[in-house]
Image (spheres, rainbow, N blue to C red):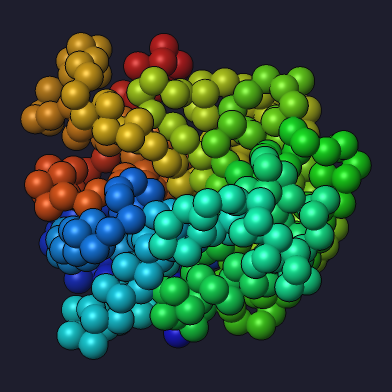
Amino acid sequence: MRATPEGTRRFAQRQSAARQPNYRQSADGLWLSSLGHGTYLGDPDAATDSAYRAAFDESLARGCNVFDCAINYRFQRSERTLGAWLNEALAAGKLTRDEVVIATKGGFVPYDGAPPDDPRVYAYKQFIETGYAKAHEFAARYQHCMAPAYLEQMIALSLQNLGVECLDIYYLHNPETQSIAITSHTFRARLLDAFETLELAVERGQIASYGLATWTAFRVLTDAPDYLSLTEMVSLATEVAGQNHNLRYLQLPYNLFMTEAYAFENQQVGESFMSAIEAANELGLTVMVSAPLMQGRLAIMESPRVAAALPELSSEAQRALQFARSTPGVCTALVGMKELAHVAENLALTDLPPSDADLIRGLYGKA
């Protein structure tokens, strides 16, 4: 079982009329809530696990059907907590598996419950000695790898942690971590191998589609060592699997302070230069934005211009989230939440429609 267009549409249609405008259809036909639940922050302890599970319940009740994590978040505890909650919710009849989108990421080395004394020794014993990767395939001091056997192991472990048969979206996590450490030729070869591995995982039914979850890659200058071209990424996927490839998602940071994804025209598609969000849409990728609250900082920072544009909203957090989810080309803004009060405040937006695209463009001075 996995998320389906029919199941996610059913979930959206079950919501109140006020919430109906808050669902957008993705490149693979899924109906996704405009705000998704992220799981990056928090201590690796039982109290945080418990808080997240209660927060997931509240998010679901408020119309959220997108849940995002990564195998390395909180040393695998975010995946395990989300998986435990999902299976309890399914057993209790709160939802069906085809109604919710479960996304995770692989690339960074996932420690088990806590950081090891020596990351290099851990990587050697867990992945090199066991044959999942070679030493030269790691980057960032043995903290990142996307070798085929390593990714296969990460997918299998994520499936186990989350207790699902299929991962709805599987992201290659911060591939630019590799690009800054090796030649462009070697990086291209590694990406081709990674994409082939992910396409094979789709064929096996382990993942439904895949994407790229990045931090800097698509919002820096074109001559930066960590810059990636979206056109080239889609070209690589096409080289591996043809026009029917399963590279369908892009995740990148975007918020009131980090506006490059929409404002910076650093991506070339054909003869035109455009922003990463515009390029992704042009290339058929669904855009999920991360860090819409800049890890909580925008919840307490005033933005008079945005406040004037969105006077109907009652908090800085709501205005920041409204800005992110209403930006043209954005499907879902992923916000990390583990406190019930934050879920209630943030997802009060689900009873309001996104702002008009022209209002957001007006904040940039775009016509």
